[in-house]
Length: 443
Length: 168
Image (cartoon, each protein chain N blue to C red):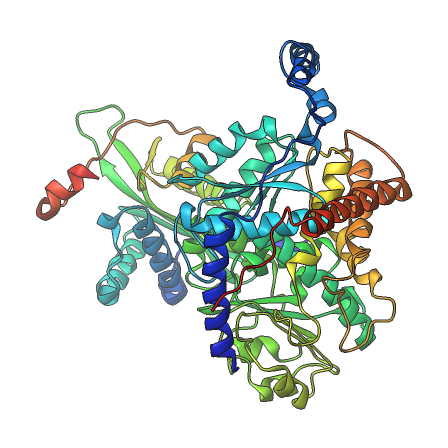
């Protein structure tokens, strides 16, 4: 089967399976019920006392209900995968898939919440109103620049973490990969020169995170569809009004005041991180030859990278990463968000910030014992990664003064490991006893 | 530091090329706020001549530039208006003010206005007013912060699109 046939095959069985299972996640009671009389303590009258206690101490909702382990996956369906604005109903299967990953990798009860809203403000209001039921929110598939306004306002308004995975998850795994790639090239973060191609949500967040991690802003060059960004570019006022985060970067990056496009941005760079158009050939081999010694190329567009790894290698790239699982070094959010959320939930954190993300990125990088050119990031079946990231994140929230519950890093690791492995064992049992039914035959 | 020094002075004819870059940036920015302020990119010659005349006619215009790092980083243009029915009988109306993005939040605007006030006093003008697109909240905040208040409103419509604009 070639890749087109493979895609068609997956499309077909995805539709058949979706009709068969009618939903990828479900809710079961978490408590024993043997007689109807048990409802006297699970429900009325006994439950009233639990309500009263939470009424007196709302924080007890994290200890006496499922709130401590429940997050909402919120989307307005305006930028779903590569499909664009398909609306909230059509976003649901994707959010269910994400909920599945949250559960399997992080032991988290994640509820898909596609909402019908028409503005950033309404998105914020609706999500804020849902706060009492949740320990955190994962925002997903929201168009840019709306996603920046929504995330900023929610992080301000909520006393639980808000995370936009397309920005923060991607930024975090890019940084983790970069840390190891620089180790392999024998280069230091404060000296690294970086070209960021594409100025969408992921690269803008990545640039801000890199600066937090010690990359000098003047050593970063950002390129968007109009070329290299610099403080004198004539469309800067327009950017100021539509995307203040991008504007801020245009003013403080590019210390050399380079002008031009992708080729010029790569001239003398140590690392290229491209999250741009899915178009092999967007990055040309001859441009890699003009980079510094041992160049590092992250060509992250999906499904087709901006340059094929073998072409980048032939042109002299030392390390090549893509967004795909069929090449080495897959830069994949799924290595980040389960551990991040396990960590903030275990610490009952009030928020998450760039400092915490930098620590998570180092934890992911350090997980790879001896990084090599073809092994700079873990893979999704590195099961111990998730509790390691969780413990690092949980401990960081304590250090940042955001945690409601404190423990040592080791203590948080044990908590996260126990939750994740128990959840996995339970799920295996559901499959073993055919409670989760076996896959049906598809013609 | 000498490098960060900001000099404000009257604009000169020799400034016009750099000056025009800032003028057109400002007009394009106005266009972002309201379609009735769409910059006329095909009329650069006349726009240039107009600004040259504001530089030349110092009795009717105060046209200033700020210099940062040897380049023009800001401009202000105020027009002297007669108001025969009111006291005092003259005012200076700021109708252009622009600062290059990287020099914002560095008091360039304030310094240019201080120079404008200095020149206005010499011309016996004590009322200064400023006009800008209603939706330009950045300008609104700036003027309010330095003590200006709303003294009037200008409403407009494109009569070829009057129904459409009404529903907006």
